[in-house]
Image (cartoon, rainbow, N blue to C red; front, top):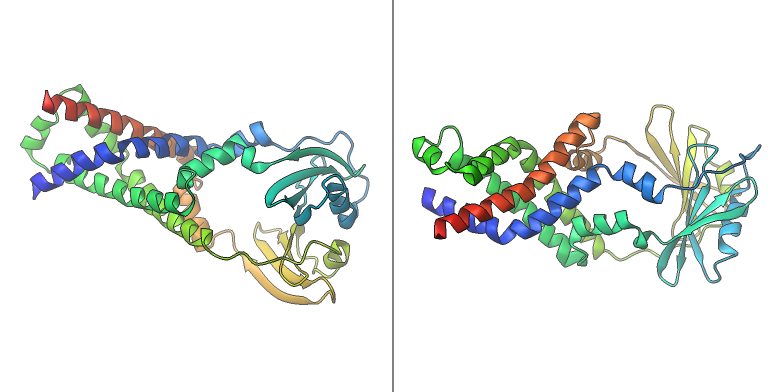
Length: 320
């Protein structure tokens, strides 16, 4: 049984090593995604701040006027007065983000998110730029990462006996054992949560999208929303309905759906910042203990290439 596990650990690592190397490097970069996004794709700073809140409909109209045929899908309100409003448009099936200065209603920036370097890295990490098939492959790699960790612990763990310790001699073997043991717990967590997120992403990629009724009468809609927090976004829904997201004083995010024609609230819901999927995402990204957990996760991401390289060196020495 130990011989079978050893062969699985060796050949499985050799076959999946290049792919796990890509996932490890991209994952280490995404741990610092917010900082990289701010540095690479952060919104421009507004020189003059508006003295009063602008008309939401006017902001959307200012974004659409320069993009003939564009359909507004969402309006994102800034958290600070020196940041622009952001309107998400669909133009010819592609998304376009337009930043609007609320004081002058002028376009200050226009970007296609799919051209962002960080978006490309996220797509690489989530699905190897291969859609549903790539997401399924990432899910399988997450499972195999757990298998590699468990078999490695069984073969070279502290209770595996002196034979395994002797077998682990040599710089490559010793480094492989130390790095693997040090990253085992976090690696298993990353593998399991990554599998869950990848399979969820694969199911969403084949789900039919609902047609939306456009983003209109936003001032009218915003007036109908109970004032229980700061409105952060208005998103177009089906049947001339608009979902209004608001951040509450306690940090929670509440949402209501308003009929754009009648102004009636047709649905309410509270998206807790601690729901199940949010916990899974935080565990996968190391976003739960500040910089300490993020640095540990970045180190584990870099450990995967190290394990791939040392595993390859060990296999070549066995053949030599």
